[in-house]
Image 1 (cartoon, helix red, strand yellow):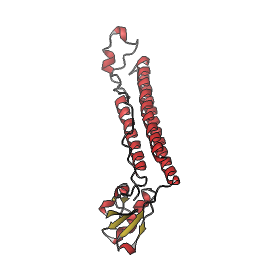
Image 2 (cartoon, rainbow, N blue to C red):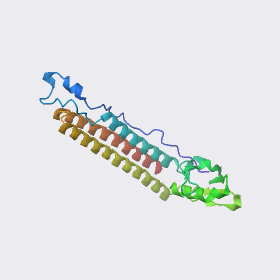
Image 3 (cartoon, rainbow, N blue to C red):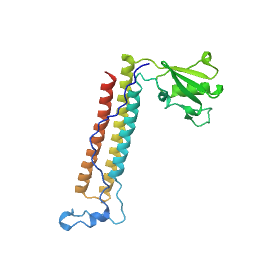
Image 4 (cartoon, rainbow, N blue to C red):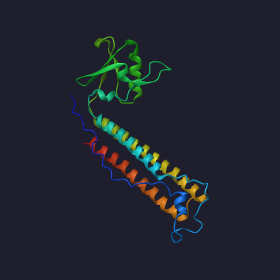
Length: 237
């Protein structure tokens, strides 16, 4: 059996800067005269659109999703384990909701093979289709010689080509995460501009909040880049 590659248990990320909601109308109104910008007080019935806490949470979820994807990719290298099929979802018909594989079958291991034993013979084709749809780079095969309800899934030993494909998957996941981070930043920038136009914030406050937004974006982008870099080092050993 191929030796399992440890998952990414040390995905190093530096502490990300804390975000906080945009200064409220009431807070702006309470500023001392010496510290407030002229004309900074907004109309009482206008609320700010920007919430840096929400933006920070959104960016953190993007990084976490990327980390999960990268960890699964690196952890799959050379590992023969039933958990390899955890992402598989099976739909038993056109209008049926897809559910986890374990609702339809059990999974065992023999040498470099995953042995899937379905509860019903009629579900074999649906299970096979679900494995392909999961895009795990595995080739399931219905195996009547193993039994009436059996699918075998060979798990190939990692080659240089396999490792490179896994690296590409990790890079793709990181690029998708960075696109999502940029999108979140652009949304926040539009919200902040709207707050300035509506006189919810002064130009000085806008500049400060814009700086915080850039810091958030840079920190989360750096975290994503570290994930991809660490994965590449592990996969190319």
